[in-house]
Image (cartoon, rainbow, N blue to C red; front, top):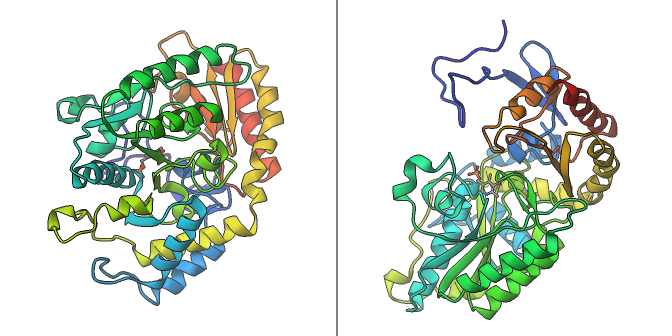
Amino acid sequence: MGPSWHPNLWHPFTQVAVADPPLRAVRGEGAELELDDGRRLIDAISSWWVTLHGHGEPTIAAALARQAATLEQVGFSDFRHPPAEALAERLCTASGLDRLFFSDNGSTAVEVALKIAWQWWRNRGEERRQLIAFDGAYHGDTFGAMAVGARSLFSAPFEPLLFAVARAPWPATWWDDAAIEAKEATALAALDALLEVPTAAVILEPLMQGAGGMALVRPAFLQAVEQRVRAAGTLLIADEVMTGFGRSGSLFACQRAGIQPDLMALSKGLTGGFLPMGATLAREAIFAGFIGSDPALTLFHGHSYTANPLGCAAALASLDLLEAAPERYRELEARHRPRLEALAREPRVRQPRLLGSIAAFDLAVDDPPGYLNPVGRRLQRLALAQGVFLRPLGQVVYLLPPLCITDSQLAHCYDAIRRALPEL
Ligand SMILES: *Cc1c(COP(=O)(O)O)cnc(C)c1O
């Protein structure tokens, strides 16, 4: 039996009329997924960027089993618990921030950051109604996260419901990019003009935009943005949902970029890819703005599963792994580099770029670039036939493997792409 559709499932981002039916996964181990027909695939995109150390990582699995037998869930407005305390302490120390608010995924981590920033000004009695985001940004699929994301095919049906957001250019760069200085100057001038309006917050994906096309910027650009945010007295929100937990080559991309945000959104790699969980970190001065006898100062936001102990236990085990072997995330960029250099010599490969565990490039195409460009799906099929699971964003191809990927598995991913190129 080949791949087919289940009569009761509704898949995300999937047009049933044209998509290939989903593969049926039955097991995961390390960098590999096993299908019901026994085939094994290299998961070259870490199952949508969440599987950090590898599938079925045994120490996380064991930590989860222990926690499940101890305390699986408790409401987080009347209770606290040891795994939440330990995780908050470790993430605050690691991020340079002071308070952690738990939610369920990357979109909610962003929503919470936006609500905190917005209400913080209101609680101070200041009118700051402008939010600034960047062209090409992706911050999630809930309404607030959609609103700060770039308007796209995804958000079009909901356009009238989305709040207004001011937008600055994102000076994306790649190897041997001669125009970068000019692009950055244009973006900073646009940001300067926007910041003349009282602004509640500036939100960005530090160093690399994800779903918007793996669009890399230079640390110096983010430092210049932070300088302007400080001069304008506004708040900087870093959406590290994709870049966090070593993906950028540092524990957080903000550290590699040399910036310190006021608020940070985390998810995806947070639990090592085992459970959905989001976290929004904030400076103490922001938390302080919500304290007082007037109930209206309260952050009235929460989710049933806030700070779920299982999620916290998985996240703690994942942090243990990152701390025990930081070279795994620090060295993946150097393992990618020679392979991406070789691939970049292929005629259709454009704009190679690399950040930590994430290698990306564009395929030269004749039809319009973007998420719907069919070349991505063609490459996906050709790679699949060679045992590699990719999910290009239109003509943007990327490898974002689990940190446990072996050299031979990584070589196999690059070989599969190289062999597919002439057939595209
Ligand atoms: C994936 C992603 C989100 C949304 O996270 P979900 O868990 O899918 O809701 C937000 N921001 C960035 C940068 C992301 O990559």
